[in-house]
Amino acid sequence: MQAHQTLADIQHLLNEVLAAPAQWQALAPFTDTDGDLAAQVLDEAAKFVDSAVAPLQRSGDEEGCRFEAGTVTTPAGFRAAYQDFWQAGWPSLACAPEDGGQGLPAVLECVLYEWLAGANHGWTMAPGLLHGAYECLRHHGSEALKAQYLPRIASGEWLATMCLTEAHAGSDLGLVRTRGVPQADGSVRVNGSKIFISGGEHDLTDNIVHLVLARLPDAPAGPKGLSLFLVPKLLPGGERNAVVCERIEEKMGLHGSPTCVMRFDDATGWLVGQPHQGLAAMFVMMNAARLHVGLQGLGLLEAAWQKASAYAQERRQMRAPKAPGSAASTGPDPIARHPAMRRILTTQRAWIDGGRVLAYHTALQLDLAHHHADATERAAAQRWCALVTPVLKAALTDQAFHGASACLQVFGGHGYVREWGIEQVVRDARVAMIYEGTNEIQAIDLLVRKVLADGGQGLCALLASLRHGLPQDDAANARRNALADTTRALAAAAATEPELPYWVADDYLRAVALVLLEWAWARIAAAPASQGPRWAEPAEAFATWVLPEFDMRLAIIRQRLSTAAADVHRRTAPAMAAA
Figure (cartoon, rainbow, N blue to C red):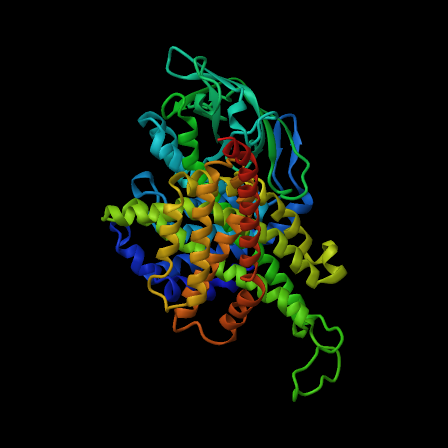
């Protein structure tokens, strides 16, 4: 992916559609960050991505990481690019100035990481957890830990990992067995093994800071007994900690990123946050990571679209059907003129443009939730982030894989061979639907833990807020009302049919995503500068090829509601008759 190719579109969405500079300048930390400064930052970021990271995409995939006797060597050029990255200050864009950061709005960091993932997903896995680790340590670390580690994590001088998964405990973290035993000096000794650890060992930085979920000796069973520990590769004195990489995985994609099996053999660590409150501390990191995974989906889909669009302009095959009165072709037409290819390309464009509005708006809400002077505004922003983050993670990564596969179709047989690079995008994109909580777990998190927890009131309030500041649209309002009614019906039915929400969670998340995308496209259309075919064609594709899925998803949920109601009637009818 070429980042500079997207710069004008992104500036349009930030400035004209979202009025982002006015929003962030209303917050105390960002009053001095005007639109011109933001434009300069993004211009320089695009230059770095295109010149230093994108050229390593194919070579990193082909060379992969090498494992030997516990050490991992990343592909040629990866370490030099990462050293340039952190020394230029890119990891610290959104970190607080008092921690050595640049104190810029979160949305600028989001654009940077979207570009990095699209340019070279494997390389980007290394710094991808930095911001989450920074937020976790900043909010939950002791003063001593923050003094020792926070500036180096904020700057990116040291990279970080998130060590959750064990061979027997994937998404069910309550099964974690790794142990931390307190020592007289205030440290702990950590013992256990973790799998699927991105960047658990590498040569990009001298030190690696592992954030490890484990149990104290007196911990209760289940997820409420987990604590979080900081376990560095190198101890403060410079000696090697008892942290061992046993192997790296052979994977479908992301060959430039080492996915490690890590063993902790009486490794020295320190408690982060309160005992048995590890999940609360870790979820600060995971929520940030989930937004960034959604951005990975956008970057990967943009990369696939760029490749497919360029190929479709060059590849000539047959004569495209013409509208009445159009001049006949003298030879084969570019396949970009054929309706089947136009449908694929404009549909992906609709997802990318609408998805960017949602992701960037969410990043703005993150800053509003932290810094707005009004408590009501902070609460509304936090509600948006809590409800929309799982939607972005699931919907955008799902579209990244399936949309990239559709873009591969544009190439025909040429897409299935390595020459054009589209097959790598498809392979790399697949894992984003799995890590940081599978997309099925995102759907359950949305419907069961967040929407139904308050009887659907928060989601219905969010849906009502989508009407503000836009022209009246009866069809859009009808869809929002239908989703709100279905939400209330699910909340009522779940009281007697607790399994029901789990059956329809995926359909529900998808319906919410489509309503949000419809709002995003209404925002784009309302901007005076969103004229001409550049924005009109994907807008039409969204309305024609994407939005009709909403009715299907709602029909599935309603049918399941009807089935559940019939089941309840069958169970209760004999008792009622006897009474």
